[in-house]
Each structure stands twice: as C-alpha cells, then as structure tokens.
Image 1 (cartoon, one colour):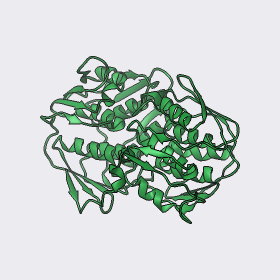
Image 2 (cartoon, one colour; image 1 turned 135 degrees about the vertical axis):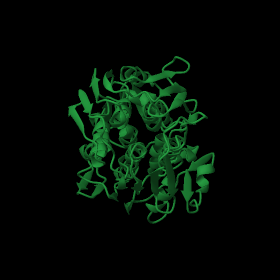
Image 3 (cartoon, helix red, strand yellow; image 1 turned 30 degrees about the vertical axis):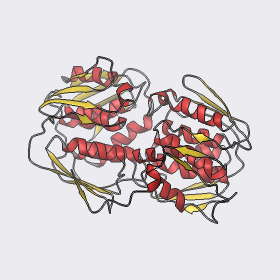
Image 4 (cartoon, helix red, strand yellow; image 1 turned 45 degrees about the horizontal axis):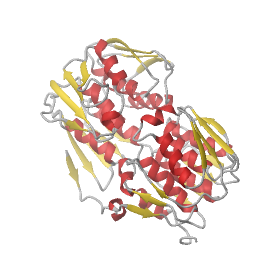
Length: 445
C-alpha cells in the first residue's frame, strides 16, 4: 500500500494520557464531517473485487479503514494508494491472482473490516490467517463461520472459540444456499453479501431470526447497487445474489459519517445552541441519522434538507426509545439524557456489549462517576436526567465512541478529563480539531 503526500501533522493531543475538556458558553457552528466509516469500509471491500480501478473520494482515513485497505493489498491482486491531502483511497487491479499472504493479517479492533475480510479471503488461493487485538480475539465470529460452510468455505476459529484468530482456506466460495443468524451482528450478513458476486454459483442467504441493526444491511445493498451489483431480497429474511456480477469501479463519493455527526448534534442539544452538518440529509441510508428524530422528541428543533442537517437545542426531557437500528449512537443519546429532565429508557441495544468494549457497562460506569443515576439490563440502559452532572476523569476503555461522547459532556460540565484521548483515531482522527472549530467566545467557566 502506498501513501501519497505528506501525512498531516499529528495532533499532539492524540498522544496524551489524559485531556481536560474546556467548557463552552455557547455553540453556533457548521461542522464538516469526513466520510462514513461504514461506507468507506464497504467500498474498499467492493473495489478490491472489481476488475476496474476505483477512487474513493472524501473517504474516511482512520485506523479501521486503513487496516482494511492495507489488508486487501496483501492479497497482491490490487494496488492500494492513500492520498492524505485529498482524503482519497485508490484501488487498481494488478492483473495478478489473489493469493493468501504469508503473514497473518492484523486487523486491530476493526470489527466491520475483519468480518468483511473473512469471506473475501475465501476467494484467495491458499490459507489466510486473520487476527486482531486482545478485545477482537473475544468478539464473536461463530455465526459467520457456520454460514460459510454450506457455501463451500473452509473457515475456522483457530482456538475453537468462535473468535479470532480465524483461518480461511481458498479458493473455496462455491455459492449455494446458507442460513445465518442476524441476532448478534448485521456485519455477518454484510460480509457474505459483499463477496457473493464472486462465488462460483448464485448465493442464497436466509436469516433464521430477527436482524439487528437493519439499516446497515440497507447501506450494504445500496452501496452494492451503486456500483453495479444487485441483490434480490425479501425484507430482512432472505437475500439472493446472482453470481458473475461485477463491481463497476470508477469514482465514488463517500457520504459524511452519521455516527461522527452525532457528537456535534449532541453538543448543540446540551448547550442549547445550533450545529449544521453539510453533505448528509434526507436521502441517507445511514441508520444513525435517526438520532435527529430522537433528539427532536427530547425537545430539540431540527431541519433536514437533501444535503444538510441542522439541529438546535431546546428544553430537554427524557424519552423511551428502541435503538436497535442505530446502536452506535445510543451512547450519544445516553449522554444527552444525562442533561435532560426526567428518565430516558433505551432498549434494544444488547449488541453494544460486544463492541470495542461493553458500551452499556462503560456508559453506566462513567455517567455514574459524574453523579448521574443509571440502571442497566442485558440490553437496556436507563438514565435519570440531572441538572448538573459533575466533572470526572473518564475511562474510555480504548473505545473511540466513549471518548467522543464524554468529550461533549465536557463542553458543558467543568472538570471532565478524557483518558487516552488518542483512541478517537479508530474512526475520527481529527475529532479534537473539529471540536476546536466549534468554539465561539472562548471557554466558559
């Protein structure tokens, strides 16, 4: 993999052990958020399977996407370049066959990328070993491995525990029919769908239970259609992909990241100010855009056009909400709920316990440090709003979303200190600079 241009100056805050957030008196800002992590990862995987060159414009250049870009390059069938100055990722076929690398592929804690890579590796000659960090080696892959068997793929967890390291033998994606559970992660189905066009025969996927995070499946199918591959579907119960379809390649513009947008919307909500995010709007398939409606139901005002979202804070009150279709922004809503009147009850988020950390427990523990009353069950989080949460030193559990949520709390509450602020590089490497950009009138006491 080649990187073009000089890397941008590294924010020194990314190397700090702890970072105290300075509060704001008010907020009125336009924030440009870089490309969606989910779309960037999907398009990297699809471009790696295209016979044509692909250029991803306004892509997210973060740890997760860099790891997947580097991983697909190790198969030798595609050259990958990253242009730091323009946020572009280029993938160009080399004409060489796709072969398993001699060394294990390390994916850190990049769950979406690792899961996509498992099925993609079945198209490579030889045996591919895929691993990750300590937390990734606890995360579940068993449902995906089980679903690959009926499609002809020999894939196994090396330690027989359903988690990485995972070994995949190829070329072995024969196609046919398989069943998969959607209860743990929609990423398993996405992994099968992305590589299915390259199977030897049509692929029929049947989901045996209810699919969690359904909008992510919609995103996958929309991204595939955008690049020339079509999926026949029966809702979220079954999917059929005809073999022999090819991804078109060409120039692909990546929509701003709705999860990244959420933190700045939360800032407007708890400060009573206004934030506009351009480049994303009514036509977005990203489920996390649903946070806008949730914040409206709490008392905020919003305007959504075809190409922008504007949110203005209001008198916040607690709500009851099922966030199964937007779990990544459930921590953001929980943070806002800490500043609302009354109780907020969030349901349908059990899979947050299987993310980069147990996000339900992390949000409970850290909000409790701030004096907020929180209750949890296996798949729910209940927050009792408080007029004045107190400052605290926040453990982030090496989880980017925990760090960014509580950074927003620090804009209103003095004394919030974020430990390991560098963990934001997983999905939002310039987060601290963007936070700088929303400041007006300096810090407030």
